[in-house]
Figure 1 (tube, rainbow, N blue to C red):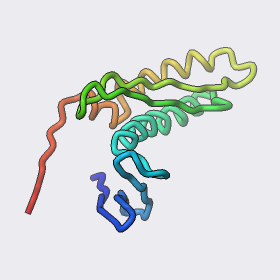
Figure 2: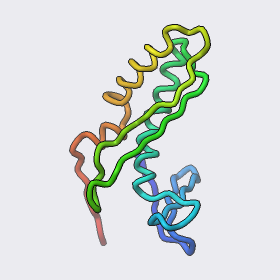
Figure 3: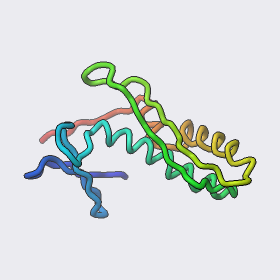
Length: 131
């Protein structure tokens, strides 16, 4: 089971996991914090890139640089439009198959293996428990 605790603090809001990592968040006006939508985009990008990287490396095609930008526009006050993931890659010098392998792996990861991608694409049930 994945779990985080989100709570209001004296400085705003924070999400914490059981391993002690923290992410500060807010409504978008504060410096140095993520908005919840930015965290969603970061989760999507993170899920994809941490899965793509080892799979391409295992196939002998470790990218010299592997980064991505994940973006979406709000189409109304509580809904996002299409999310676009744009890879920023420097291919290994002399590796003629690296781009082909990266494309194949990235598509397969996004379609089948990234839990966050699948959660966003599939209809998920959310239970709200309030004491």
